[in-house]
Image (cartoon, rainbow, N blue to C red; front, side, top):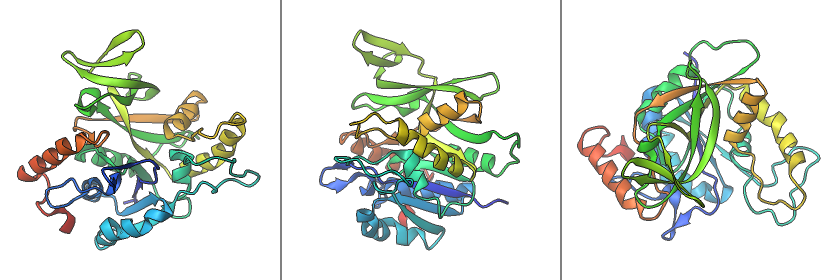
Amino acid sequence: MKKTALVILAAGIGSRFGGGIKQLTPVGPNGEIIMDYSIHDAVEAGFDKVVFIIRKDLDEDFRQIIGDRISRKVEVAYAYQELDDLPEGYSLPEGRGKPWGTGQAILAARDVIKEPFAVVNADDYYGKEGFRALHDALVSDQAEDGKENIYMAGFVLRNTLSDNGGVTRGICSLDSEGLLRGIDETKNIIKTAEGAAAETENGLVKLDPDSLVSMNMWGFSPSFMERLKTGFPEFLSRIPEGDIKAEYLLPIIVDELLKAGEARVQVLKTNDRWFGVTYKEDRKTVEEAFLKLANEGVYPSLLAED
């Protein structure tokens, strides 16, 4: 069977709250962090390599808190997202302090990813179903017609909302075969008595709570790295002068490939509940959810030691 890698995006700036680094905050009943659960589920699904994409200043924390532990049961590699990691002919704009986005983050791992790979956020809990679906898709036979084969875990909108405020979700439109037509990035989505709605300047806009949404859980072939390499200088050349916040983002990259007829994106529905610490107030809810999962036997009581 093909080797597969799990790529964890954890290089974001501005992720601190409550005096700690968000991705490294314990939320499990015995000090587990959210990544412990994602890695456990991915290894259980068949992934046999984990790639952490981090900032260099987080390297020691990552190795001490999770990397050294995880390396005892699965292959681990590190890649570092750097602002000055740019194609030849480009330099860092004066005043730029924001990372270049998820596309450049994955490019940072170009020397350590040679196999089909899944991509997830460090601070999101996705459940088991999505990892199984992505792994099975990545090791299956791929169509060879020149198009990029991409997979996306599609979460039910109602299973991804916060009790503590609005969230942004990419609402998917699909064709009759479950292939992605497009993603509508929708901001300020809140829970309502009817299910979900978006807060807009003109009031609440009701949304279908059973819509499928993207939670940045993707599956790619190794060839996608070449698409990223080609697309990054094209992205940089389009940035308006003086814009120091533009980002090279996965959903936009995938959408551009779709519109150009260069990719097919199979949406793999998962009914698992997503949760994460979008707001400080979410932490208690997340801790209670993980305690419940441990009590129900979904996870070992000492996951960080298994």
